[in-house]
Figure 1: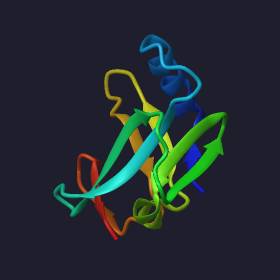
Figure 2: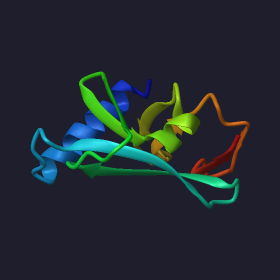
Figure 3: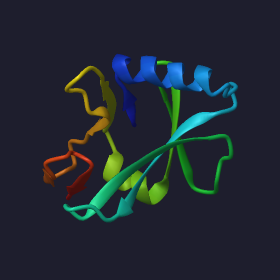
Figure 4: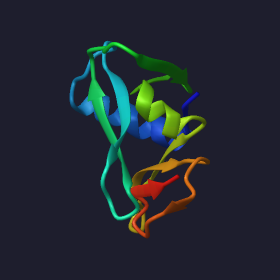
Length: 108
């Protein structure tokens, strides 16, 4: 399961409305090689499902990831922090053994 915090839900809905994305769009998250800790998170809006996609809905938000990424993201919560010191979207990943200082990459 992938989870969506209230803060992330609010921001996702704001972005979708401002970009005029209809209900067919969802949040696609994935893990790619790279970053200072070895693996990096990726997040975008998409409206096309792919083979082996894992589909979740939490807090009224549909989140999709590929099977390989799900192995790293299982039980992760998507969060959002705004304001002057806010870092935007972040992933609270219980599978990460360590993260980099910026929080955009991790290792397992």
